[in-house]
Length: 120
Image (tube, rainbow, N blue to C red; front, top):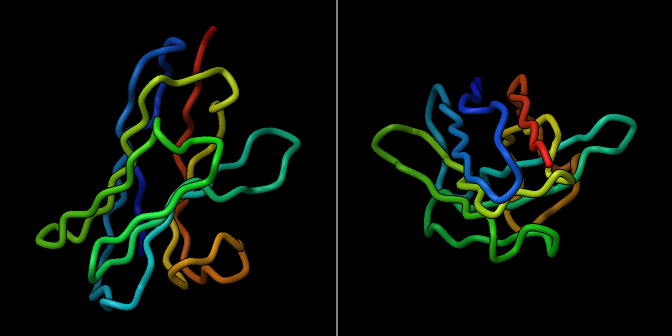
């Protein structure tokens, strides 16, 4: 089970940190990733991290602004979002799946999502 938290309303240029707490064991080969879905749009990949080695990868739209990290002792993954823009407004989802992938279908476990709204 994946449970996200930390969403909210923030002004453009501001920062927000999302958390995703996982219950049960996470295997080293698992990728923990963040996706987002804006109204009327498809769910899109944001960034991911390999649970074992901690390697990260990002979509071009957030590279340099967002950072994915994990804390193994707490079974938690984070998404630090800086320099937020109005176009970052979406529901953000945590997911577990295949490392290196950005495809929704390759992530089998999902959280319920948390709303992030960026006001301009």
